Length: 148
Length: 211
Image (spheres, each protein chain N blue to C red):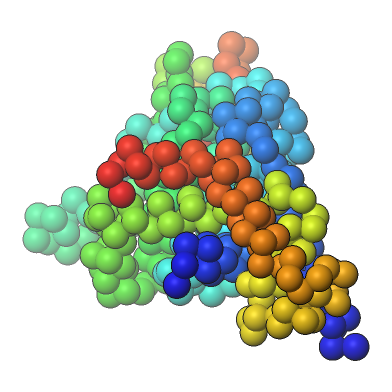
């Protein structure tokens, strides 16, 4: 096979493999741009602790299958999160009041209040990918997307 | 009659992948998307969606799971758009992120055994993973190079790489080109393809890499 023949074979693969990608798959990717936020600071996931992992690691069985704790950090504020069987319990550190908004790609928004101690509760548990948008008098922070 | 059918089939194939002339570097596209340019974002998605899709196919994900993975990966890229330091590393980042999302989906479905197999096969640092990514980047470069060719070159090459290969006398009729000109034109078009910036960059990188 000459180099030209080889190149044609590669070219066919390149064009055909792209042709196999469903249009909706590409459209969804394009639509993701609507979730771009330029005004909020990104809070990165710094800790993702699962008690189940820890206990299993020690050779024991966990009583509750899943206890999960997550921490997100932005420059001036941290968001601590605990996943219970039916809710997300969380706290802003340092404690500040404000609002917290749960965002999911399909279902839109669900806003909860953050009290003076920085506590908040979000029900029900998100079943898809989500992120949290925190607004206080001084903060405008959004977590990275996560999945439980 | 047959020639017309063949021709319309070819047109459909190119239209299907939304082949647009796309000579911008990924760095330019990322910079424009950062400034809120939705068209630039669309170009990024068009260019790299086949890479994401191919990764999902490697994990044998069904359509719904692949859609889930794709959406997650693009959301993560949107969120990181401002913090990408090296846009040239984007294909690698997309491959890694897609792999992680594929594994997550399999895990949540309780297909642990499968996940273990995949972790062996598609380990991030495994040479096979690197080769796979290089092959994908080459396909991306080939599509970009192809889109940059003249309409006539693209028509001819599509007829030539069709399966089954279109006979020269049919090509001659479809393109209104003497049979004797097909060989030389094919050579010239493939030469242009090779020397296109998108593909030349890949060849240089491969040469530096010792491949």
